[in-house]
Length: 188
Image (cartoon, rainbow, N blue to C red; front, side):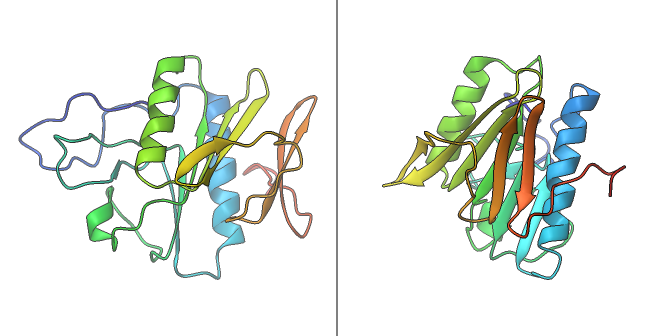
């Protein structure tokens, strides 16, 4: 999704940026596929919070930075449950460790570069970016305080999530370590 450049000053921390969750059906299907399969994978882990398109406020002073809504975010060490937004200072100051972004035609290179810098600044450990149109898949891993590009992403296993990414001619496939492929909601 996109950055929120302006926030209504009458509402301290809005729970919505007023923008759609997805720009098209394919982007939406990928967001749901990743989010729901992670929910299934971590169903028995009460301290793993997973959300899709939820505004994340990393600091209390929104004059410093506005929120970002990752397409999918995973936070270890925080309980499952409903939230209107993720206010990090109310969550034991734990940043999402893993975020996913699914590109849509409306995403600009500049926007995605800003997001990478945002995720780097606020402590994300793993960042994955997938373009379902071009089948381009990229990942970054925090090393020595910085998010560094993962040079060989094909067959990569996420250190935090223990899921494997495979790039095929027809696109990205994700598997749990027991070999279970991430399925669409119809396939589930």
